[in-house]
Structure formats: structure tokens, C-alpha cells
Image (cartoon, rainbow, N blue to C red; front, side):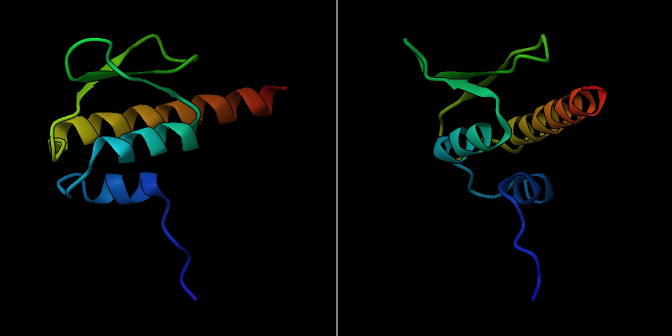
Length: 89
């Protein structure tokens, strides 16, 4: 039986799919980064403890592919940093 792909893998392989903001929120929870709802406007803020950069992602439907590409790169970088820190301790 084939291994089920994670949301991160599916988003990375197909960034042009019909991704919604709820998918972004789910990915952020799974990876351990924050997804902050906007107080005004429509752009969510995505940030983590280990990376100084903050991504802004609009909640338009569907989310454009380049936002998904940036998000998957950010999430992958976050996971790599976390795994390196775990190895050190």
C-alpha cells in the first residue's frame, strides 16, 4: 500500500491546485508555524519562531500558486531548522 502524502508534499507538488486559506491554516498547524488572521483586510500573516521573515497570504479563492510556493518553501525551511536543533540537543 502506498504511503499517504502529507499536505506539505501535495501543496509543493501541485501549487496551482484550488488551495484555500483553510488549507494554509492546516499546514501551518501541522508544521508548527503561526497563521494569524487579519484584523483588517484580507491578508493572513504566516511566521515562525526560527525564521525572521513573515509571509503575507491573501485569503482570495483560490490562492495563487506563487503564494503556495513561498509557503511550502517557508514550511520546509522551518522543518529543516527544527530538525537541526533537535539533532544538536
